[in-house]
Structure formats: structure tokens, C-alpha cells
Length: 600
Image (cartoon, rainbow, N blue to C red; front, top):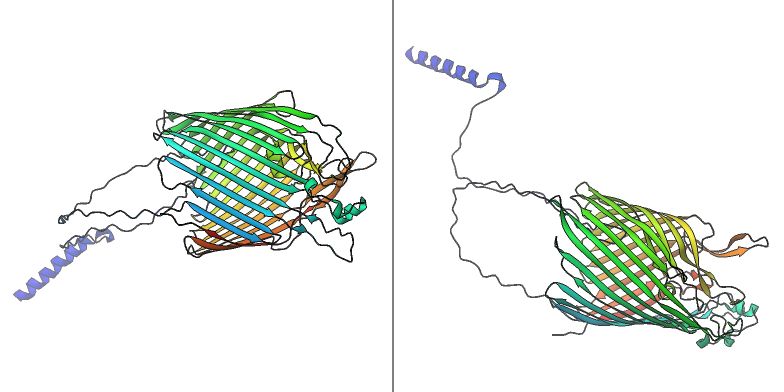
């Protein structure tokens, strides 16, 4: 009985304790385990933020100011590791640099190409080099058919060549000042080949009566650029740059253009509200010179004796453009403001000097941890259409072409969205008001009856653009870009301006052994000629049809010094037109190799 009484008492006492520990449904018992403690830092996911370059109309790269805080937390451990001896770290070998390469190729239409490049290797204070490039073609457009004595598809020789030779040097003085110089020679050779056999026959001429020597247009350019740049970019420090440009262009038919330019800027960074930064800029540019032409009886595009200019006098023009752009950039955490003015003096278009004042304002905002960036702005500009610039757009110019400066304003909005580190979307909308915008049309039929010579024309237009492009980058192996633009013009008679364009670029790199690039292009139809009826009303005469292009390039790298490549342009074999009466070659295939000369 004594044992039973003790057991019942213990059970009642234990039940009372259990009832007390489960009051309100909470179990309050605490268990203490004694043992060794092993501190562990769990792996966490890294946050990837893509680097950003703010996209502004002045190409000014704005730097973001990052603010962060560190909250240290001490973890106490009773474990004391034993000391180890310091290890001697052996530096990794320096990567070998190659200071030269030679690239050679040959394609159909007798199209050779050559690239040679040489440069200095690692040097903290100095770099220099030289290069030579050449591309040309010596084939013909179309072919003669016996059943068609005067073929509308045979244009004869369409010879062209482009050669560049130059050298450059750069020296950094005491880590504060950079001095650079570049010297370049360019030769550009073309033929006025835009005449078919049927056109020649309509004018009582034959292909054999044409002389390639008298039907060519060649440009020779000597260009120099040199200057200094202060490398100081710290806050409360004054930075500056100054450059001199000299271009001497000589062309057939007595044409000559000498242009000199001075460009520079002064900038000063300052703190803003103790946390942010501001940068004040003053950019200035002067471009001036003279152009001349010695009139001759030999008229380009009609060397067989049509119209003659009838004079041997030399016509000269003095041309000057001055631009100034003061502005301030305010760089906040995720909000940037660009505010300034652009002042332009146009003494290029005619003897009188015209003054223009444009706003230069941009506001940019980053959202979603900089994954999304939005910017809106308005800006204006004044741009001289020099002969050297115009001939690169359309080489089939009439001698003594009229040259003017283009000016206008652009209202724009831009968006950039990084969905992740691989996929990005960029979109933009622009509305431009342009005065004396550069365009081209066929020269007067009375002077150039074969209609193969172009003269610049200048139009006042309003242009609206909407476009976007996606880019996908998977490390270094695959990069894809797909984009399109739609254009709307205020004047339906605007020439050589497509209504839309679209492109696809695919780059593949397989283990740095095989690389490939695919390019696809779609270009909308364009107005090419304007007709005038008896009442003086203008209407569109011809249109260039929609153009599609497909290009492919593949390279096999045998080793670091030797690789082989194959290029195929215009794979769809289209006979599209660059300009009216100037058809393109069909598919072009080029095979070649790249070789690097081993050096110590």
C-alpha cells in the first residue's frame, strides 16, 4: 500500500506539471543539448546588376554614384585555429600579345581584299601603330545576250576600290596628360557605270565608245588629327581637351576641299548635397576652310560630248561653322539631369552668317534597381555637309555639287529594360524638325542625258521614328540582336528614304575555334524619281522596290597565328539598286586567311 500511494502521488504531481506547461496550447519545455559548435555561413544567391551607360544625344557617359552601408555582426567561436606559415604566391604568366596581323582574301567579280595592322604591345605610357586596308572589285554588272543586242540589264564595268593607309601614336605624360596624333591617307575610286546598253542605244551610242578613264571619279584624302587631353576626372578638379583636325581632299574634274577644325572642352566636377555629383561642361567647335573647282568642258557622266560648262575659271567658296555647347550634368542616385544650350553660327551655306540657338535637355530615371531606365529630352544641332562627307554617302556626285549645312531639333524618348543579364530591350521614339536635310536626285537631263549623275538637294522635313530592338547574349558563345524601325515623313515626295527597316544579327563563337556571323536586312520601298506634269504638279515617277539582304561569314581558327574565313554577301542573289540606275552585284563569295607573324 505504501508503494502504491507513492506512485499515485508522483503521477498526480506530474499531471499537474504537464497541465501547467501546456497552458493556452503552448508547450514551454526547453531542451538543452551540450556539444561542439561548428559555425557555418550558408551560401546565398548573388544579385546580378548589368552595367549601364546612360544613352544621351550628346554621347556623354554619365556615371552612377553608388551608396551602400556595411553592418558587421560578430560571430563568437571557441575554436582557435593553429597558425600557418605565409605562402609565397607565384604570379601568373603575362598573357602574350600579338602586335600584328595580315588578312588576305579573294572573291568573285575579281574582288581582292587586304588588311595589315601593326601596333606596339604593353606600355603604360605609350602606344603606336600603323595599318593598311584595301577592298576593290573589277567585275561587270549583268551580261551580254546574243538574242538581245541592246540589253537593259547589261551595265558594263562597275570598277571600284577603297584604300586606307595610316598611323597613330599616343603618349601619357606623368599620368595626367594624354597627347595623341593620327595621320591617314584615303583613296576612293568609282565609275559612273549607271548606264545600260539599251540607254546607250537610245542615245545613238555604243559600249565600245565609252572610255573608263574619262568616266571615273576619284577622291584622294589626307587627314590629320592631333591634340591633348587632361586625364583628371576627380571632383573639384579642372579637366580639358583640345584637338586639331586638318583634311585635304582632291578629286577629279578639278575639285578641291581644304577643311580645318578645332574642337575642345573644359569640364569641372563638384559635389552636390554632400552625396551626389555635378559636372559642368563647355564644349566648342570650329570648322572652316575653302572649296574650289576648276570648270572644264569634260562633264562627268557624259564624257562623250553632251553639255559643257564652257569655262576654265576656278570657283572658290569660303565656309565656316562655329558651335558652342555649355551644359551641366547632375548625377543623383538613380536620377540624372542634363541641362544646357547649343549655339551655332552657320557661315557654310552662303556668305551670310546665320545664328541658331537650341535647347539641350535630357532627364533620365532608373527604376527597379536600374533594370529599367527611362529618358526624355530635346536637343538641336548644326552639321556641315562637307564634300568629304557627302561623297561617302553617294560617290556618283556631279562636279561642283552644292554644299550646305543641316540644322534642326529632335524631341526623343528612350527606354532600356534589362530582363536579366542576358536579355535586354531598347526602344525609342523621335520627332525631328530638320532644315536643309541632305538628300539626292538625278541631275538635270539637259546636262547629263544618260541620267547617271546625282546632285545633292536639301529639304525641310518633319520626321517621326519609332523603333525597338532585342538583344540576347549567352556568355561569349551566342549573341542575337533583332530590331526594326518605322519612319513617317511630312512630305510624301521625299526621295531615298525607306518607310521601315528591320535587321537580325547572330554571332556564334564555339570554343574560340569556330566563329560565325549571320546578318539579315529588310529595307522598305523608296521613292527614287519625281515627275512634273504640264501644269507644274509633281508626282512620284519611280520607286525602288523593297530590298532584302542576307550575309554570312564563318571563320576557323587553326591556331593563334593562323585562321581561315569564308564570306558570302547577298546570298539571295538580288539585283537591288543602291541608287536609281545603279544596280548591285549579285552574290559575292570571298575566301581568305588571317596570319599573325610570331614575335618574341
